[in-house]
Length: 227
Image 1 (cartoon, helix red, strand yellow):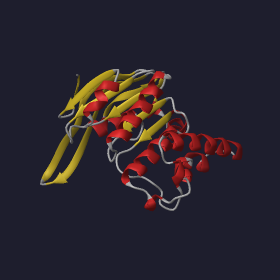
Image 2 (cartoon, helix red, strand yellow):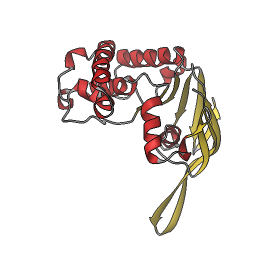
Image 3 (cartoon, one colour):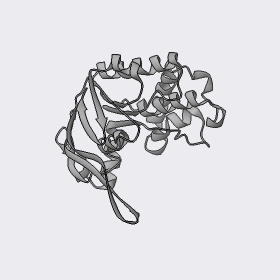
Image 4 (cartoon, helix red, strand yellow):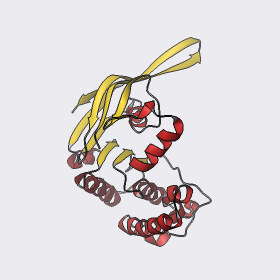
């Protein structure tokens, strides 16, 4: 699936002494191609996560549009956009987003628990077991998130984003909380996903990620440039 953002930008109005207009992302064009791992690097606060959230359908841009093939995703109503994201997009967010009342496997299969038939939920558990084995957390299947380390929670979140075998993966600092071995594992898995035809867009500070990327961009003060 081809993704292209045209003249995309994001402004925020912050109330303080008067009205403070803050431009998080300057108007820009960007394309994310299938079969490619696109890397975006930059300092904290440069607008990387804001851009990722706009591209993934989580944050409406102030200007411009985001096209998935021929679909302008922000022309869809909320219900249709939610359905579109569930069907096509996997997001690995920053921070810990586990549902603490659910076990690891229930967290990974959450989208199927909410929207899925009994047959789909059964197949999801089979694939979840494969993902947990690949990420080295198979023995934690029935544990609650409170029993997991930060790195284990991170790998669970990545498995959850991949459970529907999405056409597009957005990864926001996917290797934070991971040691060197698991950082290499996650980067390898995301690279393999791209090689299988998935569009992968990753925001990171991890310098080793450059060696896995097909396309590298940088962001500074809300402006995108190819590295």
